[in-house]
Length: 203
Image (tube, rainbow, N blue to C red; front, side, top):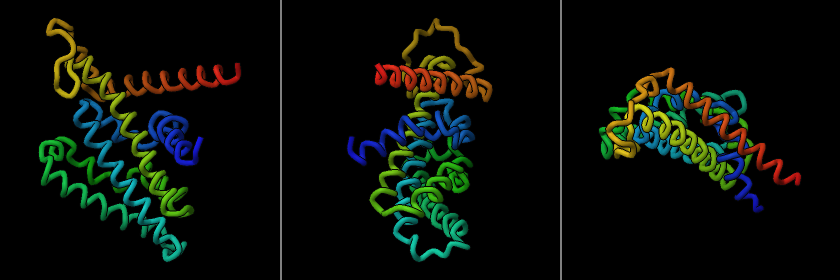
């Protein structure tokens, strides 16, 4: 497998931010009650990870070690602000629905973790790919969690009905408790798949 392939496999499967590293759990729980909100948060976070990873890597030799955290905050905040303005301009409904969770990307532990452990220590291309891969892993996790919650609570996916009207809505899945339940299911499924994959390789 190529280095690029390994980075994407790492971000989406082996070190999935939500399902393996358990990073970014607050937005994962808060914005996954519907597929639309999950997609909006996932794509926005991916864009911030990609852009901040590229910029921090490009400037890493110019950023003094003692002020790196402040520099990371400033760079990430700039991209989050730009993303927030773009959402308000071109997707106001999504911006209103996500609300405070867009500005809170600035302090998302996932974004800071990748800036600290990868972008500040690697080249521009690898850092950009890492941001994209981790963002895609975050997006995939949010969509998987949201699919369970929206389908069981409303019988829809992306607001399109997929279950019959007679299906009894599991209203708790639209509430915070339902988010924890859905996360547990998806994490368990991910661990089961990884174990089966390892067993298949060993055979």
